[in-house]
Amino acid sequence: MRVVIADDSALLRDGLAGLLTAAGIDVVARAADAEQLIAAVDEQLPDVAIVDIRMPPTYTHEGAKAAVELRARHEDLGILLLSQSLESRYVADLARAHPHRFGYLLKDRVVDVDVLVQALHTVDSGGTVLDPEVVAHLLGRTGLADQLARLSDREREVLELMAQGMSNKAVAAALVIDLKTVESHIARIMTKLDLLPTPDEHRRVLAVLAWLRS
Image (tube, rainbow, N blue to C red; front, side, top):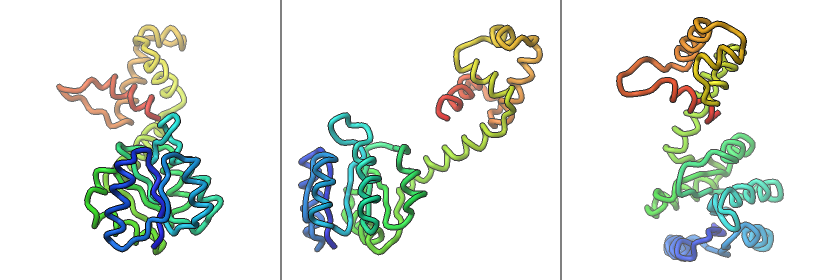
């Protein structure tokens, strides 16, 4: 198997290259940013590209965007994304559009060389590898979307105004409805978002956070 490693950390690039070479995997190129990654894949035509999601210059999603571009240019290229923390932007789109020859692992997981090597072989053979924590994160976002979809148009208006920091009285004035009607809408919002009363959590804050994350 021939792989390209793309990560802005020279220490991580060299460390992964050493581990993979010792495991019998051919590391054909190393890249420090998305531009170098694309050039290396175009030149070397590897079986799998190991790509850090966050790379220079902005350290946001350059790696993930490069992976999307590479998949469009090289349909048979396996992609194994790495991330220091949970990310969902681009990942869900990649997984849906290209479920085969695709993987996503947290960097903490790849310190175990057996896990990394097995993931590469799975991706190279046409399979999909998703870190268990990533799966839970993506499913959590899906569950949130489903819950918000339960809200009526009026309930969504109320929640949006709550997210702007408005009190119940201010929401009532903005929507030209009485205070009791606002309270009824909020009670239904809490029920539909499965936010049951507890002594330790502020349900209004949790509801607003759910809206903002959506």
